[in-house]
Image 1 (cartoon, rainbow, N blue to C red):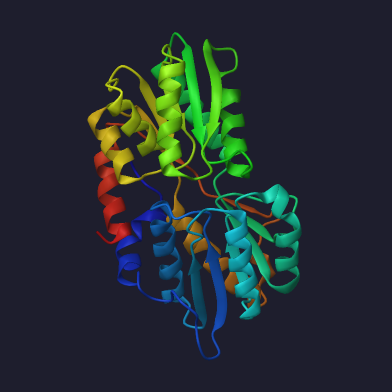
Image 2 (tube, rainbow, N blue to C red):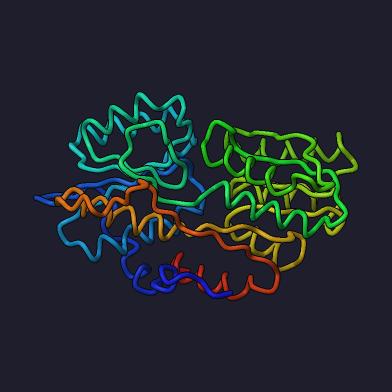
Length: 318
């Protein structure tokens, strides 16, 4: 599996993992990157942010993680950032529909960029991240490959309020349309990992004929994998998920997980910081006419997982 050029810049990223995280002092142009939860997924995005900061000596970065993955915590973070006079914010909104007023308030006071999950009805300047409908179709194609004759599947995610979750589900539905694959239900867990696993255990009892389990957010893969192991059904039920948590990749390597659709969060961080710096320094041409910068996804299965995992370790600084 050949990865995009952005991921190949990993060694330099590791060297600056500790740089630029915290409030910049002096006359630096301060920007912020706000995640939607505390997943290890964001470690990679942070490396991309820090690589960009290392290339932009006039830029300071605050990297903010809402530990409980709630919209309320994101609001507190944004309020604090605005009070500090932050110039630009790149955020993955937890609940974009209900956060529109808040996001518009941020956009009136600072440059607002969305990343990972979009808020298209807001006044954000640009979205940087995955085409989540296309990523969902990619996952749907993997499901059909695992179930060539069809079967019943169950979908798990933190919340369907998030744009990326809704779009991934829509992409899966598009891909399986006309096939014999059927979605039995969608279970949400509000980013609670204990509940995420409990949802899977409950589904395995309630629907004993399930053929494949699908996780839309990064921690859903490990939650599904552990529940399947605990239920003694490893190898008897398929798993297709998203992102690259270590347990997920180990599950792909062992064959317990059929495949995972990975994003390139390093690029989210790297491109977001560079974009904010350019625009705030007067170069608005950095924002495309579409107001979207799409970073393609990759499908990782057993034959490509070792190469991908090796590159990922360098990005994570491990």
